[in-house]
Amino acid sequence: MGDRIRLSSSLLLEQRAWQVILDREGLEWSQPQPPSARGEESFSVPTSEIIAVEETEIDEKQSNRRKWRKMSKRHAFTVYYMKRKRPHCWRCKEATFWCVDEQLCNQWIQALKELIDSQTSRPKRLLVYINPFSGKKQGQRIYEQKVAPLFSLASISTEVVVTEHANHAKDNLSEVNLANYDGIVCVGGDGMFSDVMHGLIGRTQKDSGVDQNDPTAPLVPCKTRIGIIPAGSTDCICYATVGINDPVTSALHIILGDSQPLDVSSVHRNKTFLKYFVSLLGYGFYGDVLKDSEEKRWMGSVRYDFAGFKTFLSHHYYEGTVSFLPATHTMGCPRDGRSCKTKCRVCKQSKRQLEQLQKFEKDRHGYDRRNQWHVIRGKFLAINAANMSCACPRSPKGLSPSAHLADGCADLILVHKCSRFNFLRYLIRHTNEDDQFNFTFVEVYRIRKFHFTSQQLEDSDDIHNMQKKHFGRFCSDQPTCCCTFSGSTWNCDGETLESPAIQVEVHCQLIKLFARGIEPPSKYEESPSMVQDRSYVGRL
Ligand SMILES: CCCCCCCCCCCCC/C=C/[C@@H](O)[C@H](COP(=O)(O)O)NC(C)=O
Ligand SMILES: Nc1ncnc2c1ncn2[C@@H]1O[C@H](COP(=O)(O)OP(=O)(O)O)[C@@H](O)[C@H]1O
Ligand SMILES: [Ca+2]
Image 1 (cartoon, rainbow, N blue to C red):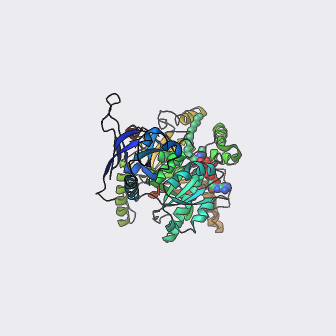
Image 2: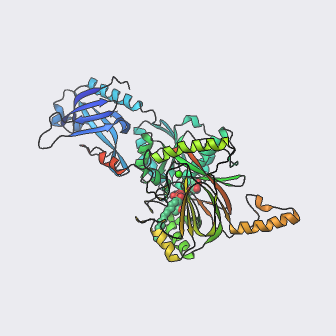
Image 3: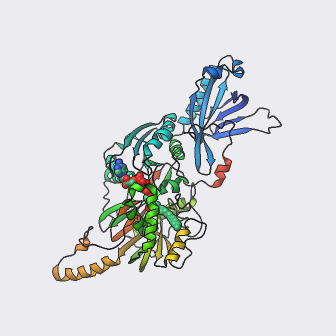
C-alpha cells in the first residue's frame, strides 16, 4: 500500500455513526462528537494486527431492521483483527462497518486488502502435519474446528498431512519441495515438533552439503518458519515461546507472520549425530520419568504424573562426569531474573557477540584463553540442559526461568544426590515463586557446550583400554557399544535417547518459529477494548 492511501469516512458500526480512518499505521474509529455521558470513545487496530477484510453478506432480517432502512443501499464490510483477551491469549474479533453506497464500501475493502498485502512476512502457503495421537487425540478436531477456519479467513492455502507413524513428518520433509511453502505447521506435542524440526534441519543441511555427523561442522540456519498448534501432553515448546498453549493464539501468530529465532542444540556421540533439542535434554529424573511414561501412553497426559511419582520414590542417582564450556559471549546468567521477552535485547546482543567470538576463535584455530572447560564429577539425581525456560502448564516459570530462546546458550542444571525430602523441595519450587537454584545440592551454569560420560562407561573404557592394549579391540569407539549400562535415559524434547556418553553444542538461532516470545504484561493492557465484542472463533 502506498503512502498516499488514507481513507476517512463516516460509517455505521453497531447502529452508531463513527469517524473511521485508515492509514499505513492501521485502522481507527472514534465518535465524532462523543456523548458526554459516555466519555470519549476511540479504538484502533495496528496494521500488523489486522487479519482480514470481507464484504459482508446482509441477510433479510438484518436489512429489514428500521435503522438500516434509512440507507438507500445496504453495503458493509467486516474487518477481522487480533485482540488480546488476557495475557498471552489472543482471539480473532470482528467489526462490521456500514457504508452509504457500494462505491465507498468497495474503496474501503480495496484499501484494507492492499494494506494487508503489504505485510510481507505473512505466510500464504503452509504445509501442515497433524499427529492424530498427540495428547488427548484431539489434534485433527482442534485443527479442523479452530485453526483451519482462521487460515481460510486469512486466505492461506494449506496442504495437510495426517501422520500415520512416528517419523512420518521427518521422512516427508526430506522429499517435499520446500520452495512451495512459506511455513510448516505441526499440530501435536513436543515430540511432534521434534519430528518436524529434525526433518527441516536435516533437509537444510543435506541441501547445503553439511554432514550432520561432524560435530564441528557449522550448521546452516533454516529459512522456513515452523508454527506449533499445541495439541500434545506437555506442549512446553509452544508454551515457552508464546506464553500459553492455546491453538487459536498459535494460529494467529502464524497468520500475522510472527518470527522468533530459536537456539537448537545438537547431541553427538563421538562422530555420530544422535538428535537435536530446543527445550530440555534431561538425564536422571526427567529421563526416567519419560522412559517410564512411554509404557503408559494409553493413560494420556496423566502418565507423567504416575511416572513422576514412581521415579521420585525410586530416587535413583547416576554417577558420571560432566564437563562444560561456560558462555562468555552473553551478559545474562541463569539467576539474574532477566527472563526472555519479545524482541529480547539479551538475545540480540548475545548473538552479535557470539559471532565476533566465533570469528576470533576461527582465526586462532579454536584457541581462546577464555575457552576453559570445567569438569565436575559426581552423583547426580538429575542433569538438565535447558535451551529455553521450559515453561509449561505444569511449571509456568519453567526449569530455568531466566534461560533465553535465542542467545546461543543453554542453562546446565546439576542436581547432586540429596535426600528425598530435599529433592521434593527442589521440585516444588518449579511451581512457586521461590528460587529453585538456591540449594547447596543444585548448581547452574550458562554454557555453550557440554559433555557427559557415565561412570559405567568410564570404567568399561578403562577395561577396554586394557583389552585394547592386550588384544587390540576397542568397542566403546562405536556409537552403539556392545556393553549394557545401567545408566539413565536422556529426555530429549520429550523423545527418549539412550547413550552413556554425549557431546552437546548450542547452535545460536538455527531455526525460526511463528511466535514472538513472551510479551510483557503492558502489551495486554494496551490492547483496545471493543465496542462489538463478538468473538469469531472464541465460541468454537
Ligand atoms: C511435586 C511437584 C512436582 C512438580 C514438578 C514440575 C516440573 C515440571 C517440569 C516439566 C518438564 C518440562 C520439560 C518438557 C518436556 C517435554 O518435552 C516432555 C514431552 O512432552 P510431550 O508429551 O511430547 O508434549 N514432557 C515431559 C513431562 O517430559
Ligand atoms: N500417526 C502416528 N502414530 C504413532 N506415533 C506418531 C504418529 N505421528 C507422530 N507420532 C509420534 O508420536 C510421538 C509423540 O507425539 P506428540 O505429538 O509429542 O504427543 P504427546 O504430546 O502426547 O507425547 C512423536 O515422537 C511422533 O513422532
Ligand atoms: Ca538459549
